Structure formats: C-alpha cells, structure tokens
Amino acid sequence: MGRAVVLPLLLASIGMGVPVTVAQDSRAAVEAFVARFSDVRISDVVIDQNLALYLPDGQRPYLSGEQRMFFKVPQRQRVEQTLDGQREIQITVGNRVWVRRADGRVVELPAVEPLRALPNILIPVKRRAEELLAEWRARGVRDDVSHVVRVGTRTVTVIGARPGDRDVPAVWLDPDYGVVRLVTRERLPNGTKLVDLALSEHRPLSGRLYFPYRQEVFVDGKLLMLYTVRSIATNTNPADALFEPASLRAR
Image (cartoon, rainbow, N blue to C red):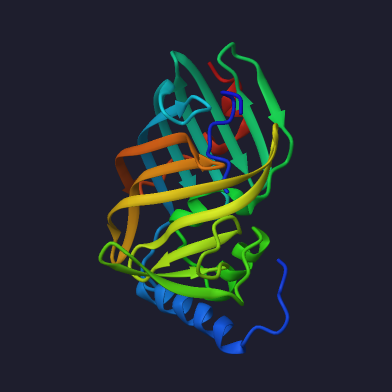
C-alpha cells in the first residue's frame, strides 16, 4: 500500500439450512444498538489523529505522521495528512476520490465504494439496523450466522462467524460501543488478504454514542497501521469548499 493511501483499507452470501432465530438474534443486537443513539444528531466530524505505518513483520513502525479528517454527512470526506514530512490531501465525494500529492500534482483515483469509508463504521448515525446489516453483507459478512463471546468484561455479538472461525468476514458488535472489530477479505496490490480492523479505547462522543480512540489495521494477522486519536469535534460545520476538488489546486 502506497503512501497515497490516506485511509485504512477498510474495510453476501446467505447460507441455507441455518436456523432463522440466528438471523433474528443478529438483527435484534443491531436494532438494540441503533436504538441507543436514535436521538443523536451529527452532521459533521473533525478528527485529529496520529498515524503509524508498520514494516511487513508488524513489529516496528517505519513511517509516522499526523492526519486531520473532515467528514460531512452524507458522503463527503477530506483527509489532510503529513507523513514522513510529506503533505498530501485527499477528498472523497460519494465514490470519487481526488488526491493532491506532496509535489503539488492533483490526480483522480479509481472510484471507490462509499461503504468502505471509515466514518460509516465509526459513526453510524441516521442509519437503520437493516441498512447496517446490508452494508456488512456487502463486505461479505453473513448475518444468518452469529454467536456471543466475552471480551474482557464485555459481552459481544459476533455476526458472520461461528465459534472457532478465524478467517471469515465478521463484525464484532458491542452493545454500547458498537463495532469493536471488523474482519473482511480485501483485494490488495499483493493479492487477496484478510484485513482485521480492531477498535478500542472508546470514549463518549455524543449522547450514548462512543468513538474508538485507538484503531489498528492488521493484514493476515500482522499490524499494518495504527491510528491514535488526539481530539474529535462534532457539528462544527466545516466549509463546503473544503470538499470541492478545486480546493486542491488552490495555493
């Protein structure tokens, strides 16, 4: 993954013969979670965070930097990144992406799937349970398979995997914190890999909605990226011009 990738690579087959109650349990868990923040109103988010990229062995970072991420409902995103002294800016509108390179060149990248945007996972406001389940199915997660596990002192519903499954797409849903782990299979430049997004250190964001201040991206079990949030603000109404590709050419 090149340094131009300023966001994690984040990350629907329906099986036959599985008891209907399993799918109902998955839906019930998601509906209960969504109901927690039905009255939360978030129109935009600004996140300042540190970023570290790790060597292929996942043991040591080889690049570090900072990011400022602007996200405006429904599908506008701007990421300003300084990595190893090189500054880049990426704007995403729907499924279109533009990047201003460190040398000042502005390029449009191949279209991406809007569902892959990180804020859709971390800040699922204005979403119904069925919409979240549909997004997870689009990532290969089966909502007719689930089980419950203990993670420390927390009880978590694992949607998409049976007990013992380690390499299948799955969503780990905490009843209070939301998604604490997302496992998917992604086509990367070096082939299809198992991508595991682990979310932790949740803190209150708005109402009963929490946000993970630590985000780790693993590829085939090895740490690739680490994000640590320094600050986050909501409903600051960033200017619409920030999300316009023309702003990348402004000096």
